[in-house]
Structure formats: C-alpha cells, structure tokens
Image (cartoon, rainbow, N blue to C red):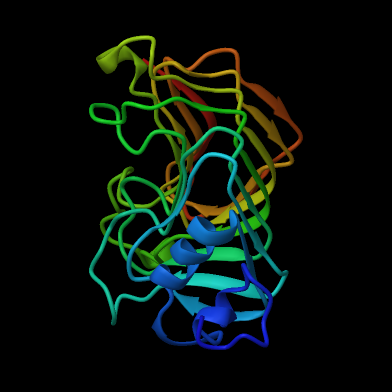
Length: 238
C-alpha cells in the first residue's frame, strides 16, 4: 500500500485516486487478492485490463463510482469486469466501455465457451448500470453487428468441455444496460439464472438473447427505448 490512511480493500490504499488519470486494474485485482473484498468510493476508475472477481470475492462500488475502459487509453475488447468464481459478487456503481464488447462489458461465469474450465455457480451482479460503446444511435448507418456491443455476457463452456464446467444459478438484480446491440447474452446451458428488474435502454437488436439456455427466471424488467423498429425484448434463438 502507498496510502495507508485508507482501509484494506479500498483501491485508494494502492494510490489509485478516482480521477481516471491512470490505469486502476492492478489496484482492484491486488485488493481482491489481499482482502477478498474491494471497495471503491465515488469517482472515475480507468480500467485498461480486466477486473477479475474470483471465488468468494466481491467488488462493491459506491453509487457514484464508475469503472471505465477509455478508447483513448486501451484498445482492449475484453470485459471490463469478469465475475468468475463461485459466490462472487459485483455490486453498485456503473461499468463503461468505449470499445466494442463482443464478450460483454461485464462477463458473468465463463469467459468463453471453449476454454473456461471452471465452475461458476451462485454468483451475483446487483444494482449496477452498464454502458456499451455508443454506435451512433438512431442515425447509425449501417447498424452495428449484433455482437459488437454486448452489455452482459453469460456463456457456458459445458457443451464443449463437459459437465464438470458449469455456469448455473447466477443472480442479476437491478441491472440497467445502455446502448447495447444485445443487452444480455446467454449461451447453451447457461442455466438456472435469475433476472430481477433488469432493463435495457437504447438497444439496437435484442434485450435478452438466449441460445439453448433454459430454466432461467425473469421478474420485472422492460425495454425503455430502442434505436430502431423491430427490436426484440426476448429472443429464444435457435
């Protein structure tokens, strides 16, 4: 730690004040590794890499805390936050990306469908706003591909790697996704997840897109605004 006036777990203890001037990825991951719980006060935290929340770890953002991937600082299209392990938690604040996000601005569970050989169960994602890259709104010509800007990505590697690697029983509560091509994307056997009051604003293609994902529960939630006609709220994709 470089600033011991802050409590262990507070990213400011590692010298990363919430100004957005420098990359705070290592500060978040170091706080998680050392304390298991990472706290972030109001302000802007630049994330050039990926904040990874492993098993039994949590990131708690205050209401005014913003984690942002700035296009001027990083060309990465990886998730800004990866909620990876069993009983992992991301709560509060907002998460932004100014780049394309084909694997989600926030990824829950497995990182991809072919190499993620771990279990991810009972993770939680709550009370957060997710902002995707702005593709130009209603004036976009042509409209972006549907996987250019995924807000929340929930893939499962179980069909490819076997039943030992499952992504089940996650909870998303009070999540709002802005400007996504797909707000919430689930793949085969990403099962048993619960969505409570999860909404989407400024969508280009789909609110929820489920490919062979079953046993998921939806309570509340709604489409607030679409950039074009024909946007689907929930697509049960072949």
